[in-house]
Image 1 (cartoon, rainbow, N blue to C red):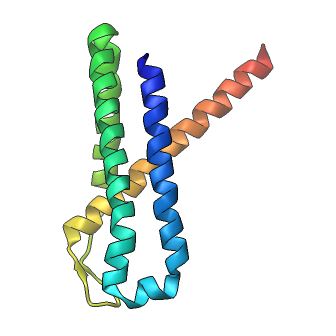
Image 2: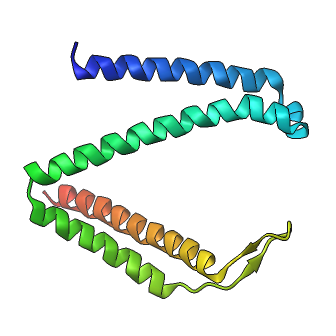
Length: 145
C-alpha cells in the first residue's frame, strides 16, 4: 500500500469522525451549548481535540517536507526567502506600536501583545500586496507577449 492510499484513508477516517462530532454539535443546539458548561465540554471538546490532532499532523508533515526540501534543493534560495520574510516581519514590527487595551469584559491586553497583533496584521498586508503585485505583473507580462 502506498503512502498516498494510507493518507487518503486516514483523511477519510478523520473526515467521518469530524462529521459525526459536527452532527452531535448540531443536534445539541446552540442554546444548550451556550447555557451549560458541561454540555459544552462534552460536545465541543472532542471536536476541538480532533482539530488539534489534524493541526499537529499537518504541522509535522509540513516541517518534514520543508526540511527534506532544504537538503535536496537549493539552500541558498531558501535562506534568502526566509531572510526576506524575517525582514518583512521586522519592518512590520518597527512600523507598528502598541498601547494597553482593556476590553468590555475587563480583560487587559498588554502593549506588547497589541504590538505583536499589529505587526502580524501589517505583515499580512505587506505579503498580500506583494502577492497581488506579482499576479498583476505576471498578467501584464503575459499580455505583452
